[in-house]
Length: 273
Ligand code: ATR
Image (cartoon, rainbow, N blue to C red; front, side, top):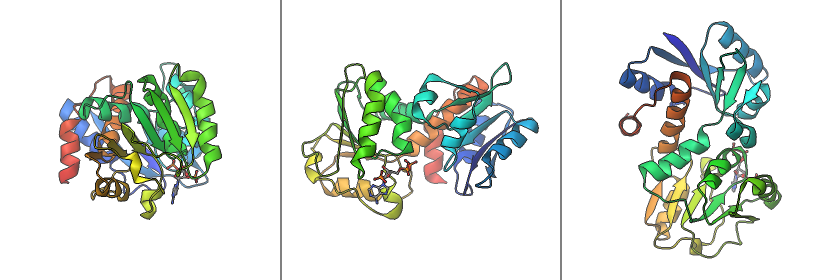
């Protein structure tokens, strides 16, 4: 079997080994996929050892996505801009190559799985950390009408808006604090880590209209804190990040194996695990 793994710290909670073994079963690919906890001070050594042992590809998760970007010898265009990567492999010349499949995973989940139109939509993105930076490029490619980045630290939202403005080709991209947005959006994406602490960004409930779609990038078995707040304030459709998690994995699997697995049965299985 060809060897793959996810590297992070901590790593025991990772769903990636489960997802990829379901993909391997479904597609009949000879893939073995494990989880590796890298020491915080030696991510690079862990990656080197893995590929020296004959490993074929790695997924990278918190807190190493930026380091993986640094370490790569070659980056795809979308990885270059994301500043962080979740997928590593060797190209046909043996160079350590990095890609970021998170943004395309989010966009696929929104559009293909949930039938949400990003094109022409007014989008509010909450947060301005690595998670948001990783998905902005693919969101902008869908040509929404506008993307408003709201963050606790407004300067970080401004920096992201400036970074992505040149590639935004006609999309109105702007940065604000949480208190500023007050009109309903078509789509609100929560990319803050506030939910992890059970916290809520201090948004006005008037950003939610009857047709507003809510997407919390966090994956959770229960309704996330943010999605519960949105439901309490009249949101019609709320989604968490499980679909994105499975879609980004499917995209990595496709890069490595040349086969794209069916995602719906895997998402269904995760919900029932
Ligand atoms: P990640 O990789 O998850 O994006 P990060 O780069 O540390 O992690 O970014 C975390 C994001 O969540 C940031 O936008 C952060 O806001 P600041 O830039 O102001 O720090 C946001 N965040 C974290 N905890 C939060 C909270 N309790 N309330 C609101 N926003 C929060």
